[in-house]
Length: 156
Image (cartoon, rainbow, N blue to C red):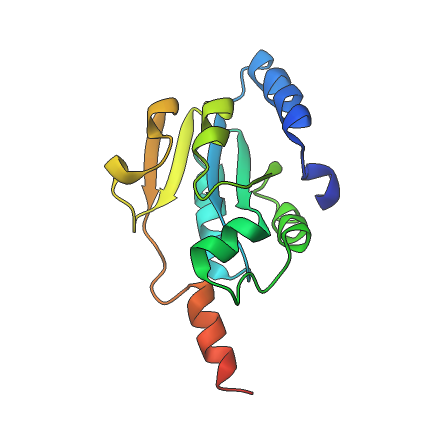
């Protein structure tokens, strides 16, 4: 499946979920900014995919990333971030969300499994009450977009 076809509107997401559930598929959801794709991102996506049949990735819009990360972010525009993430084998669908957290999106999806990085406590995971269960992923030390940006500034 081509990466672009994995980027779904809310309406297409609803149809995707309906078909998946009709076929008894276990739905997994995770989210993030995915600004500069790195090994940490790939690792959490592969981990999340291993927890079910279909992985839906929620990606913050540009406005949301700017509010969360500051005026110099995102480095890559939302269309590019969605396309890059959608190209990964582990990802079955990508959907953008405008809020600072994916709470409303999780309410809509009602995933069987919600995966977040272990930098969160389960009690702090947005939307946990709408998921079958929450699973935390142990982060890869030193792998973050912020670190990539800091390192790249040393080369300029």
